[in-house]
Image (tube, rainbow, N blue to C red; front, side, top):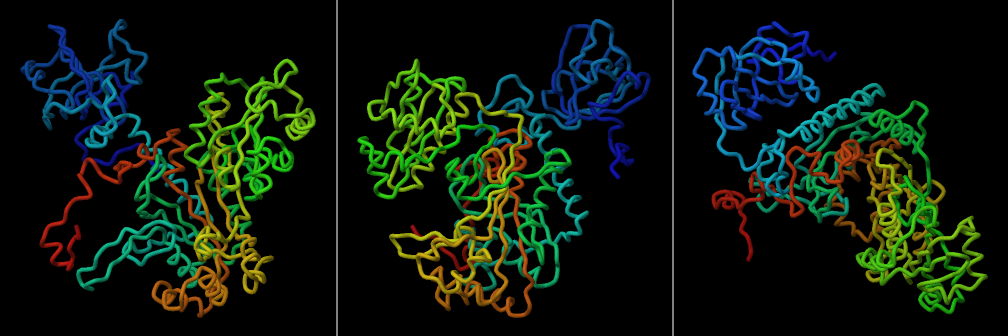
Length: 594
């Protein structure tokens, strides 16, 4: 059990956030960084800081050379011995936990002299992001980042404890491994011993954890490092931490119950918490996204059929081409937008292939603005019925021949409006279990299927016969026994029931257009293992860094990683990646092409 009592052997007796009025009279030793120095002529004070807080040092009874204090530059590390005493009534600082006391220093020693720092971690002026990344060790001295490191540690402990209590075994898997098909490029490591061959850093331990099930491990977990060479965003890093889980003889129901328990534990939710469930088709219909933020409304409405014969050709042509027309209604009570805000929605949808956002307003019983002239009384009545309201407000629309573009555009509009109209409760955690994903994606240009999750995901039992013997059109409609955990618009976990039959796995490779030679080269070891008695199994992986983003209430993944990389996948502090030496290249039989 954890305890606050320290083991002997530290230079200090207390940390800088620890002393209180009950400690008055004690002889103490403190160590930390010089946060502030005040020279008031006859009085000298230093605010000493460590990760736990601040303590004021006074030097009224100091017998040494007081001028030594001028050598203690900000961020220098010092050791101070002295006696705790009460601050004068006029000097009590109620904004500090230690504000009722100070340490009257009898001995002070400089442990490490700091040069002028590029920025002060606790300074008033905020530094630039690049400077903070270059000097990450200075930024780590901030209360914000230290609190996140503590939170991250506590959260990992909670997860481990919950899984240990559920009879899971923690197993480490290799970092130097073979390529795993997770949809991104691999980071590869050339082998010195095996000339011309490479290892791949795992995008996830997918085949390894399945092999552990074949090996009889039963319930496995690991907080593992994963690596993906992909374009980065605010919630992505080239290396990240995953809570990896696999269970033998498990159905989707077990994984959902386990995920619910972990979410409840990590986010301190009530004991009766149950995760809401929606199918993939339903979340796409209502939100246009498989990871919707359900903290606010503004749900989508499919109005394709309503506009199939409309005189507004943008809508009718999309409807007649088998596309999709969607609407969002914002009631006057919910909020209103100025014309410039409505026009700005064009820029919101452009990155997703949208050309604009159609709209009209209902105010004072009149239909005005945008596409008002195309909105007949019959269409308006039908829209009201779909929205379930006769309130006045603004209607927004998106249409395209490709349903995905409509979904993406209206998802972007919904998220934008949610923020602009301040509809989102920043303190809430809204979870969702999304299931019944499509198994495959068919590319009309290449005339081939791609796995939407990964090639080890099992079709649903009801679709197994179609999968094994169906044609292209039947394969397009097959559902995967796959699922995601979503929170506040982030996918924080995803998994599936796995294929455990050799014939089904071989069929999957065939459907994906993989030739026997390719299958043998990439997965021969795995196909061989499937032959020797494989239990049905299922798993899930949680993005630990994304969970930490939610817990820390930050939108930047760099905040929750000790030594992160930039959006260009560079480490400004260590200046990585860097050029290898010629000797290294020669050992690896490598050279770079211009």
